[in-house]
Amino acid sequence: MLWIVRAVCTSKIAATLCMGVVAFLGDHIVERSALPEDMRAVVDNMTHGAIGLLSWHIVTAHLRDLSLSMRVCEVLFCGLIASAVDLDHFAAARSFRIQDARQLSSRSPMHCTSVTLAVSGLMLLLAHVFQWPSLHHFTWILVAAVVGHHLRDATRRGLWLCPFGSSPPIPYTGYMVGCMLLPHVVPSLMQWTQLTHHPATSPSVELVVSVTEESLTGLVQFQANELSSRGRQKPCVWKMGFRFSLQQ
Image (cartoon, rainbow, N blue to C red; front, side, top):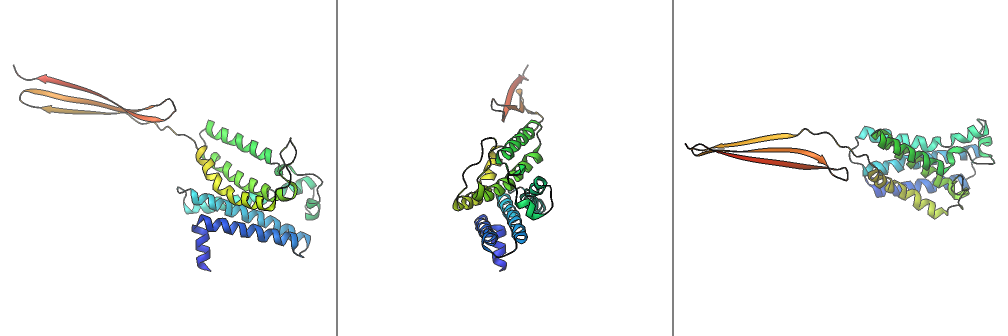
């Protein structure tokens, strides 16, 4: 049993398969079990959270520059967000009863995929404008958690793309494939939208002098970095040599 846990924690493929199994078992319990409605709602929400946990765990497996403690915090945070999306059911129903929350005639705001994408795009823009790496990182945690939640719900009612309406319900196979592919796509999108830093570097000056009986020779070398037309830094070196005769 220990080797299974170790494989899930270290292998992206094993974690992806585990996420598929968790999603399938959760859906089976929710749709086909004889549990009371309240218990099925709890299992449904726990499945959302577990998928969010595993989804960001797979993302962090692609990101090598995170410490273990940071990975654990982000994984738990993503799972929490994936579960918290359903809280808007209670807000829309104006009730804390699970039965009231499940009997809404219309969808609640946090289940609108187009709004999620628009807000995420705005957050990425602000992250680039203000050079805010933590906001950039949090945005993708939000995308992984909420979009994964929406994909799972879309098997029943489709994706809500306000103001254009809703898409047809997603086939169950399409949902499983999309859910398992999402955490592998997010790291590439994070890399594509990463912030560009141009740290200031101090120029360096080097003086090399050589003295012989006949002459004094030297080389002055000035090195600095300048920005290219694409905003990238490239090293530039300027050299100037001199020679003085010491013979009378």
